[in-house]
Length: 342
Image 1: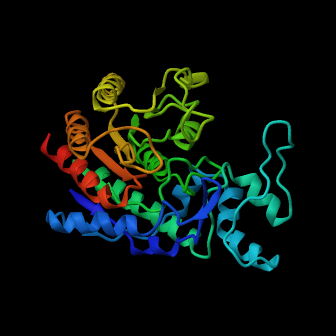
Image 2: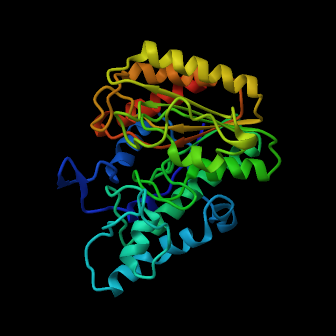
């Protein structure tokens, strides 16, 4: 399987993250990629290529143009306002507040953010664009006839809405790739999100469409981020009704229950008869992940890959979460090997 990866992910490295009431080292940090690449080299998974130039039109097919302009320019605005640290929102327009875009940078940040743990730094835009380019280059490999490709993306993407960032995500790599498949002739695209956290951004982007089928396995939103999407009764809207399927699961979920949900989700995808499958491959369902509460083992990710591979669909796998640093490489490589051996 060809792997696409960019060293430009290093441009995004926040100095801290608000978590548990303190400012701590971010869970989503460059070392995640180092552990994955180390495991790939150990297993001779060395067919790794750099991404091609980014097609900005592909981003605009998914993301709001005002939001993209914000991401590109917010760091300079932040510095011009006299700030020096990383960018965090100070106010977010929830519920009864007006949903209007302010002129001042603090207001813009809150308008476009949906959670406050995610910092923007001097290199965030460059890293996010590189991550999207990784996904689009891998998408072209699959569109060109390969059985599968892996987009080793960082920052991740599935929490990014068309005009919101959060959950460590800025550009929705899986959604951008799925739309690219559609634009290049695929009549139907399925997206399977196996990250521990619900793919709220991906769901929202395609919620009223019947050409993209979205399935997510995740921690129940009553107990897990992002809390406000991912409930079982969210099934799509308008012509998209029935084309979103959520499998929220409780704390302590092990592979037996999790695999039942995956089996059901794969069955639903098979019935949809997609031309191509996009997998948001997060490995934070792992038992020791610091921001999850599922109990999957490393061997379970091999079985996960096998189950997905048995669909026999052209498949683009896109890296999302996974924050147990010492295990992220093993879990990611296991999922890819399981897929290839299916």
